Image 1 (cartoon, rainbow, N blue to C red):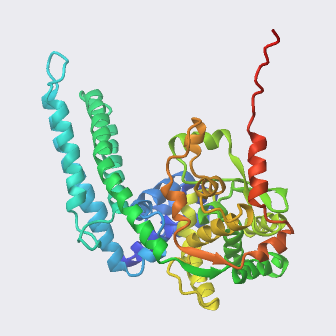
Image 2 (cartoon, helix red, strand yellow; image 1 turned 180 degrees about the vertical axis):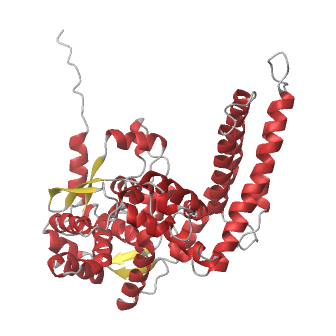
Image 3 (cartoon, one colour; image 1 turned 60 degrees about the horizontal axis):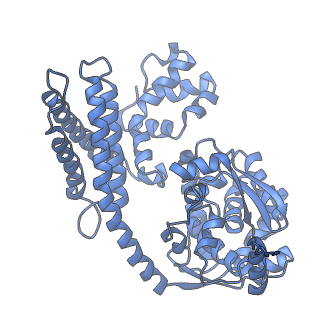
Length: 455
């Protein structure tokens, strides 16, 4: 068997593979992963090997779930940091949640009467447990200026707690009180959600203040060097080696504004509409009504900042070179570390000093260029940005106006993009005038003719 430190490194390596990745491997490959860490692995069949590999790497997979936008390599900077994270998050948080569950279980049993009815005090008791979860998150130490946890970390811990509570209840399916436990768990999770909404409102107010601050610090950035870099890359795909996939990925982000996980998602598609537009399939970060909308309408038209054929060829190049995956969460673990380094190199080469010049920042730059080229540089562009970036589809499903304006507005906050004429030259179109946009809008409005009385 491997020593403790070697086992940790092996588990971290295993955690980078999704269940589907493991299924696609040969038995010999699975046994190489299992050697020195899983007893009697040599006698196991493929199904059992996969099961054992998933179990042994579960703590490392939890890390990746709790911090989905951080590559595992960043967490692996040294083994001490990783061990502390497993201790402080998994064990400490898990231990606290298990103690809470024991109290919850005892409470359910004590409030359920012999005549098959609830003691009315159960509602107040459940609210009290929910408050303890929120208080626990508020009092937990973190790296914020106030010594507490970041808001997003609180939400992740909340999810961890709720998921573990659900697993603990489901583990008692044969218990006499299972139905009562499940019923009260629904009440508890609902109360936690209600109470976390207060934190959400506080976060929203903070976002508004931060947006105003970012708008004041907005810096100018020339789009031409980025455009030249991406055109050169996508026009010479046949000359690139597979190791240069980062250039292709960054170029696609520049020209389409899609997220890293959308560009590298195997099922994502870019389909030709015309020289300056494609139909995009593969929108991520959709929940609730928005998820339902995209199930019915998986594709939507987006503008591109170069000849659309180059975009389609570039995305196919990534697929041909096996730089796409089935699971979007695996994208960040597998590619974001390399992409981050490539973006730093591009930033240095182009002499850009802006803090927000990241792969994610390219989405903001794309939105600004589109507004200038296709939307007549309209200052009131929130709905337009929501449309081209895929936001607000849940409201559209119900025929309502888009209510989340903060997210689209954030794309106006970081950059003042200049030198966008190169886009017009690349796609050979004339920019729309405000008169033409107004005329186009008027055509969409159906005017009913008044009925004339013939008497």
